[in-house]
Structure formats: structure tokens, C-alpha cells
Amino acid sequence: MKGSIRPLISILFLIALATTLSCRIFIGRRGQHTAAAELGSNRALIQNFNSTLLKFAAIDIGEEKSKLEIDQLLELNFGSLGRYKAYAAWRRFNEHDVKPRNSKGFSEMLRSPKFHRYWLDFRRNLQDWARKKMFQPDIMMDLVRLVKVPIDRSNRTYKSCAVVGNSGILLNSRHGKSIDDHEVVIRLNNARIEGFEKHVGSKTSISFVNSNVLHLCAMRKGCLCHPYGYNVPIVMYICQPVHFVDYLLCNASHKAPLLVTDPRFDLLCARIGKYYSAKRFLEETAGKSLGEWGPTHDGSMFHYSSGLQAVMLALGICDRVSMFGFGKSTSAKHHYHTNQKGELRLHDYEAEYEFYRDLVKNPHAIPFISDEFKFPPVVIYQ
Ligand SMILES: *[C@@H]1O[C@H](CO)[C@@H](O)[C@H](O)[C@H]1NC(C)=O
Ligand SMILES: *[C@@H]1O[C@H](CO)[C@@H](O)[C@H](O)[C@H]1NC(C)=O
Ligand SMILES: *[C@@H]1O[C@H](CO)[C@@H](O)[C@H](O)[C@H]1NC(C)=O
Image (cartoon, rainbow, N blue to C red; front, side, top):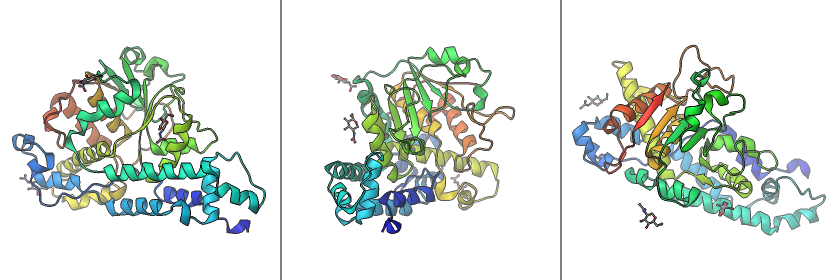
């Protein structure tokens, strides 16, 4: 009997594993719209955006696959679950703290209100999230309400924010004190600060992570996902829908808010990331067509980096944004805190640097963001 156990959670994990590093989002196709309509603005006319490029950036190659994955997860409803699958999910939600010895204990578990409640929560969260996925150029103006207010119940923007990227260029930078001098310090993907304080600072106001990071630390009992303490708010974007399991597990134990980024905000970031990558591809490979961009950028796996979305978040909730630890140098490690050698191909860091340079010098050259949005000043520290 035991041998036939096919836990729901292993199905979830299989789905997760199949795309372990995938952080992709689906984007609605826009059809034959003009550049101006793509942007929901007249900036397109002023900036003379190339509409072919805009349309290309608005298409997501993996959209269908992602929708299918969400549908499959939603269909695994509690009533139709194989009992073993239900059992496994229940165990996961219970953090492995109850082990039934026989089939009677097992049936009791299936009827457990605790499991049922978690399962319904999972479905509800996933459903709400999937429903909200659409392009909305003025989502930037909503970030205070969506993120700042839940964190500190105030709709005043932060005076100054430091976004600390994890590049190895931080080592020997001695930026620690200037980072900590900001009202708010945003850190990425649980990067360690112990031992690096002189260069990266020691204050953390917001921890920004992707859900792959949370998934890895949530597998341990008790959700060991609080490197900066239980009182530091976490903002997370969902890489894979199944990670709502991890979200619910960790949300229950985290004291400060654990917020999932609005999927409309994710879509905006996805378009910007892809736009800059495609634009750079055309500029650097004279003669190649956009059709060749996919195969050289992991196609449907392509995704903006966590750093890009953390910077976008800061733009929406801060009066001034300073960026530290973004950039590379041949003499620097990829991450200041790990020995990871190469970088992931699914990100296009050079393209993202181009975006950051536009933020500093020419924010009007950035497509997809509503005209109404006022970009705060941005400074990049090397
Ligand atoms: C826009 O970019 C595409 C793809 O590179 C190119 O073929 C087209 O000529 C460009 N259009 C304009 C108006 O520059
Ligand atoms: C901020 O909140 C106050 C009350 O809490 C409200 O009166 C005000 O309109 C809000 N401002 C914005 C910009 O939302
Ligand atoms: C997450 O936790 C907070 C605080 O305990 C709670 O108010 C909120 O409803 C939880 N979110 C979900 C989706 O369960």
C-alpha cells in the first residue's frame, strides 16, 4: 500500500522541478495595436518607440503553458483528490508533525479541518492571482497602496531607499554606512550580511525575494525564511504558481507582512525586461531578426531578475532611489555572498543595466509605464 503512495506534494514538486529556475509569467497578446495603444499613453509618439519591438516585448512565449499549469493545480480540488495525494499535501501543510500509523488515522487526516482550510486557501490565493494577471500601465501608481500601506499603514512615500543588489562589486566598496543612512534598505533573495556589513550595511527594512528562494527555505520545518528576522516585511514575486503552498506555510509563521507582488506589476516588469533585452539584441547583432532572440535567451524561461523588480518597487514607494551592488566587473564575483560562478542565462543583466541607465538619465525612454507616473531620481553607486 505504501508503495502506491503518490503524494500530491510530489506532483507539485515535479511540476516545480520541471521548471526549477523558471520565473516566467504569461502576458496577454495585444494583437495589432499601435505603439501608443500598447503604452496607454502618448509618450510613444514623442519617443518614437518602435512598435514592432513593443509588440514583441508584450508577447510571452510560455503563456499557454503557464495557464495550463494553473488550471491543473486548480483542478486538483480537495474532493476529487486521491486520498494519498491529499494525505501528502496535508502532511506538508502540517509540517510533518503528525504521522498516522494506520488507515483509520489516515482517514481522519483527510477530514482534518486544518488540511481542508489550507487547501481552500491555496486555491483561493492562486485563483485571485491568476485572475488579476493583466497589463496595466498605471500599476506603478498603486504600489503605495499595495505594498507600503500593508507594511506600515502609512501612505506617505519613503524619503529615501537603497536597493542593495548582490553583485560581487560590493566587496571592498565600503558602502555599508551610506546604505544604512537611507530611510529604507531593500535587500534581495536573502543575501547574507554577516561579515559583509562594512560593504553592504546591516539594516534591512524590506526583504525582496523570488518564490524559488522561499520554496527552498520553506521545505524545512518551521519555514526558515527569515534571515533578517521575523519583523522584516517580505515582498515576493511568484515564479511558479505552486509556490503558493510555500507562501501560505511561511505567511503563517512570519510576524511582519509577507506580500505577494501584484501580477499586474509582474507583467509590467516582464515587458520592460524583455523590451530592453530585445532592443539590445537587435543593436548588438546587426542583421538578426527578433525571431532569433528567443533561442539565445532561454525562450519561455526568460525572466527579469529580482533586482529589476525590487528597483521598480522602490520607484513606486520612494522619493529617492539609490542602487548599490548592481553591475559587474571581470575582477568581481557574481554574488558577493556566494561562490556561484556563472550567471543564469534566463536573465539579461546587460539589458537591465541599460534600463537602469535610462532610469538615471532618461526615464522617458522607458516604455510601458503610464505617462502619469512621476519617476523619482535614481542614483547608481558603483
Ligand atoms: C523596428 O524594429 C524592427 C525589428 O528590428 C525593424 O525591422 C523595423 O524596421 C523597425 N521599425 C522602425 C520604424 O524603425
Ligand atoms: C492617505 O491617507 C489619508 C488618510 O489615511 C487620506 O486622507 C489621503 O487621501 C491618502 N492619500 C493618498 C495620496 O492616497
Ligand atoms: C497572512 O498572514 C496575515 C497575518 O497573520 C493574515 O492577516 C493574512 O490573511 C494571511 N494571508 C493569507 C493569504 O492567508
